[in-house]
Amino acid sequence: MSNQVTHNADKDRYEIHVDGILAGFTQAFEDGDVVTFPHTVVFDQFEGQGLASQLVTGALDDIRVRGKKIIATCPYVARFVEKHPDYQDLLA
Image 1 (tube, rainbow, N blue to C red):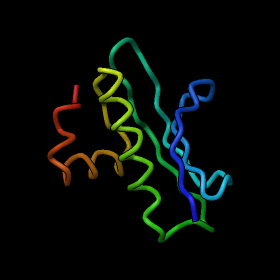
Image 2: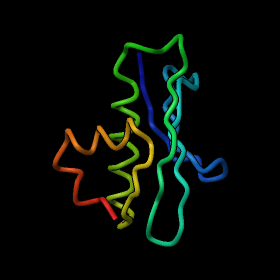
Image 3: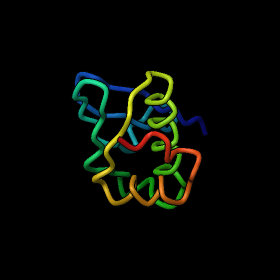
Image 4: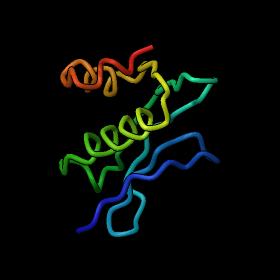
């Protein structure tokens, strides 16, 4: 099984694909140097595989490379950052 996280700027979100099939996404609305994450979804048939964590990790790593900060209004993203101190420097 191959998982890939991509930034879909046209849809204002990061997506995770499993073997080429869209498995979930996290919305990511950019405003200058700040990206707001309001909602994360992993589709039912893909739950329980750790995909949300992989998705958020990929998104936050991309945000870091791009030199931006985040606002985590999505409860999942907020908890993820709280549990992973190495991402707390991204908080706006």
